[in-house]
Image 1: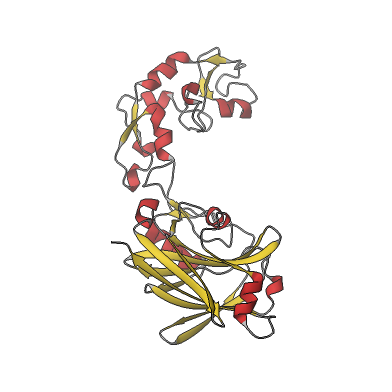
Image 2: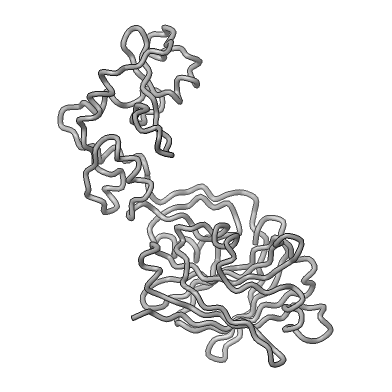
Length: 315
């Protein structure tokens, strides 16, 4: 649940077994551990030490000239002091235009010679240790790394500002151990979501469930949030893998009662897409509050939604 959200209860029914879950509010303290170091310096492909000349002495990141500024990536300008010391443009502002090596004013001198040297270098991806063994021109390295299929995944949990990253097995263990997410085997499910006072549920994220299906993992989200002036409930599925793999699967969700039903069918979104991006694109089963209360029956004062679903693999 998002910080400040209301507690609710989720009942998961599978094989005639009913399990109750009390969903507690997340702490405002964000998790900060990571599973991989993303510096990537161990992957620098050079046997002559030239790359060391391209390291900023302040932040130790590789420096990039503005030759690719037309692209929407953050490249660093090489700056040089009168004595030839270099640093990146970001750190130039941090050191108040004073060279950290000799304390001379930096001015606005470009080190064009070093920029030219950089053009001749080819470097490996910083995710080389995670399986990427390709080599890239110096100025193409950053662009590749932003889309590298070996880059770590972000934690898919939506109830807190979690900064944990890692591969899929690492994140599955993290969700189970640190977020107490429920894990279920199987490709069909039957969930019953209960909330005693649905009027309290605004911008509240409800506990997600992870399904092991076809040897892969899928995250089922169900939550309430404000869509314009209306309170709506939404359920959707995310795939723990890349988008090209997610497109090999489909899923359906169904909710209903009293002879009426809503059915959603779609393709699970990759966890490369953030929870908020999927939610805001309304790519899932959306239930208006009045309809949700109608499905709940009774005096319409308590939310009782039963959502069934199925995951299958496209041939």
